[in-house]
Length: 392
View 1 (cartoon, rainbow, N blue to C red):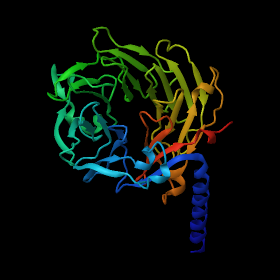
View 2: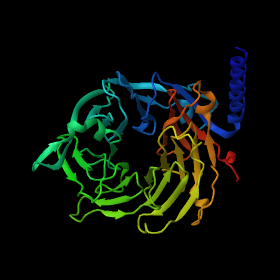
View 3: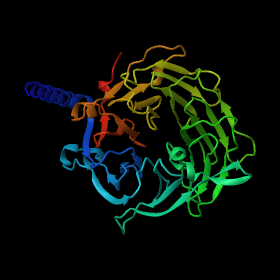
View 4: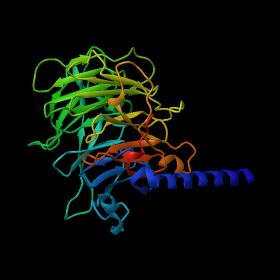
């Protein structure tokens, strides 16, 4: 009993120390507690974000508005509202492992990580606060089994897990979704008709995907867990351009992201992180050995470019931290790199011993504002003070 009391005292002391430190290191910090943990942090506007549960039972899907105090440009002290607010909500009978909002619409598409179907959602509007399911996309794969097209429903649990999705960067005449689980089954589907608009040409070796991302309406990239990158123009009959992994493959999966300028960042849990340019993928612009993991690797690494802060990336997913790195400080030769900033809020405020971040997302317009979610069902939105960045 005495040891438990001492542990609680140490935890409370660490939380108090972090809270005092946060007054200097954060411009804004807001905390929200969901009923269940989420892997989804999907922006629907600069002021609203979707979250959703991924448990085996019934799951909430919510659209939350950011705290008004965070959004206030001036006189924040006069704005008392510090909480997230639910603006639209609904329920899903299936877990939601990933969700993608279609820009310029109130449509969203979700994957349950288990079946060979994608679910379609109406996120509601001014006349309704209900998020409702409107249909589904049943996906078929052209497999040469008996010379006939075969649905992969029989292998749904294995095939659907880790299915990636991407939406065009701006509103199209017809809403569409790009999706795939491996480099051989990437498809573009019309959401209104659920008809297949494009299917990638088969590669010699099929690899699980780590990333799908549009560069323009007709051009996209596919990143695989082995570190290779496919560059695809859906308007051309030419086969995809394949770029090999930056390092020989091992048992560690690569996470990847591409920024609008064509820079590719690839990182794996061992900490080796490489920046390349799509126009010259045979060379490395920069690389570094980061401290992304504490060695336990309890989750999946997630790396993302900042959309409004040049050269910056965020890493999370293998422990309870979200780390920010400035890649402009890296060189072509491999060197250790220190995080410019670490968000430790999920670790110090959680009652779980091994809390991990389940997702993070940069704000699409605010340079240093991020959302992060953790396995204890906490959601944080934070804006770090650049004067607190590490000078190491």
